Length: 114
Length: 111
Image (cartoon, rainbow over all chains, first blue to last red; front, side, top):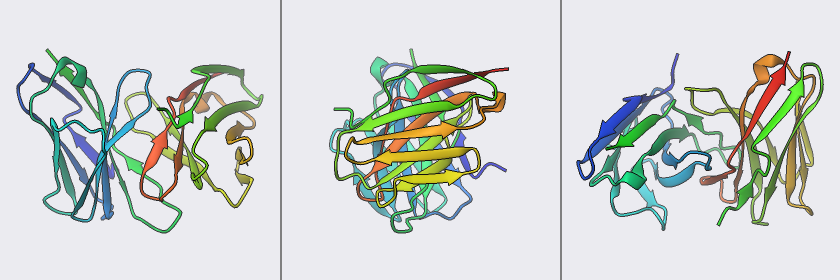
């Protein structure tokens, strides 16, 4: 059974049209992450939540926002998608346990921008 | 700047032989390292990890070696099986909460 679920799996949006990607988890983990992965590149952390505490990476564009209304759900909002935002977006969760901090990933949402 | 590097985009190995996947890092503060495996259309799944206080960790057919002085780790798969064909990502952490990933190595195990 999927423990980290991302919807939709594929999302097509138009240049400049706001889009929201969603992630839910059944693991009751404290931490939720959003990564962006472009073709042949490493997943790049955009931000993460530790409980309700939001942590933004310094180089994450302002165009990207996130919401975590409760433990189970986390959303990625792209306010004005550009062509360069086309990528795979991965959600992950972890329960912070000292040095052992395994992340559990969803299958990702592939975003296309037309 | 890429702090974790996997310089081999792809690797092909005969079934039954050893697969060796390599990873280099630049940040000497990294103290925890993981390998993830990713099949097409799925998210990465955790495979094996190692803390910087160790130089080897073994789990069945999978062994991870860490050479801190060289800032290098490797994943050995013995014997390799066709089901091991996937993309393998190396990841490293300094704080336990943020991970830096490599670009991945696509392993093909030839029957």
